[in-house]
Length: 186
Ligand code: GDP
Image (cartoon, rainbow, N blue to C red; front, side, top):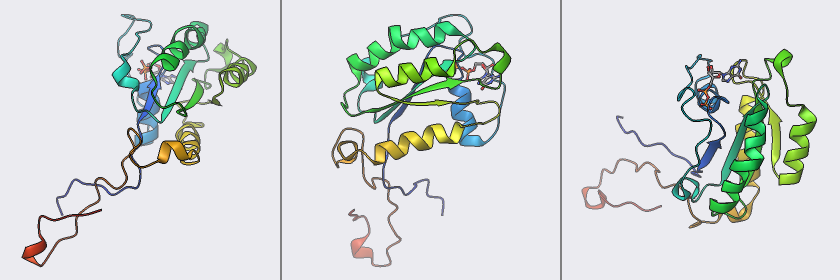
């Protein structure tokens, strides 16, 4: 079949936020393709951080807040700028947040301790993990733990709640009976 439709039960909107260069693109690539590609920094130096619009946040069920354990300002910007923006714009009150300290493969260059990460996560009320998009340590866990928590939060799964669509792309089985073709229900 040349159908491009995929079958699934839930469609979640997850956001990856944090300063440029912390490894957001690499994390996503590492999770989806099981490889590490050394990406040249997407927007090298042009902007250390850029706030996003409210429409970007609207309807998100999960937000991954990424910092680089070797660059302190990427950590402080999460509490000073990004967390405030999330609180302002995210429309799902129960939206699950996860703090992720990336680049733990560069242990000798670490400047943000694990304890600082844990303390911030506790204070802000979010999940916490350290990972390396390069070595893939904890990469799958980041996405899995976030999704498991979303699946465990009934208000985020309610049908009709913003962004959640149950079986919207369910494939329509081929119909031999011409009278029913073009009809679908799910
Ligand atoms: P983004 O701007 O947040 O999307 O960051 P990128 O994904 O473009 O990554 C910025 C740079 O950091 C790139 O050169 C990546 O190869 C590198 N990088 C990303 N993740 C890691 C990691 O876990 N370890 C190391 N050593 N480098 C990484």
